[in-house]
Amino acid sequence: MVEPLLQVESLCAGYTAAVAGPFSFSVGRGEILGLAGPNGAGKSTLLKALWGGVRVFSGAVRKAPGLQISHQAQGFDDLRGVPLTGRELLALTGASEAGLPPWLAGRLEARLDRLSGGQLQFLRLWACLAAPADLILLDEPTNNLDKAGVAHLVDWLGKAHGEQGIVLVSHDHGLIDAVCTRVVSVGEGT
Image (cartoon, rainbow, N blue to C red; front, side, top):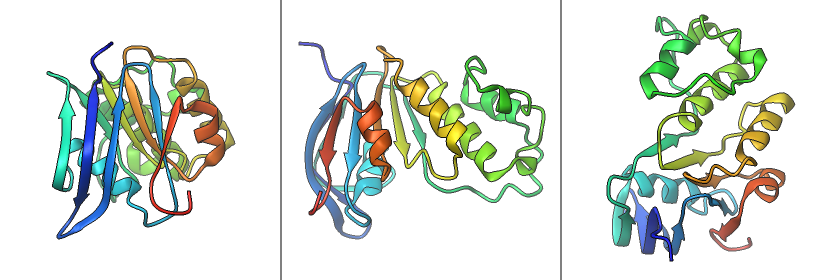
């Protein structure tokens, strides 16, 4: 059996108190694990626990030695006045420009605060997807994307990136059905 990139065992996580869990699952290379469930079920909290962004109250997150994680969070920081271009953002994360859709590749010299919300979301997403990482964590990656952006994301995710594992949180059931190799239900009613 191949060693998993990530092993989650009876994990309960949260902020001042546990709000998510217990969860148990593993993620291996080439897998896209979907976390599905209603709002407030703890999907984003669980994702944050995987990279250390929230407190683990019980259980464990075991990572393969030397595991490199790339994480795309929901939401945007206010970038007004920040003189950073798209190309500079990709360089900061070590992400390759190869594979960017043409409608964004031609905008890499633009400052981030000059991009549309959808362009900025896709660029932030690409900075995560194309960074050198073993495990990619995606939190609602289709938020603010138009049809072309979603189609490009689905195409990229569908190309079986055998050396990486991906954990994906989404309310977009079409995305989960199209790209996930396995789904973990989070919360009741899922």
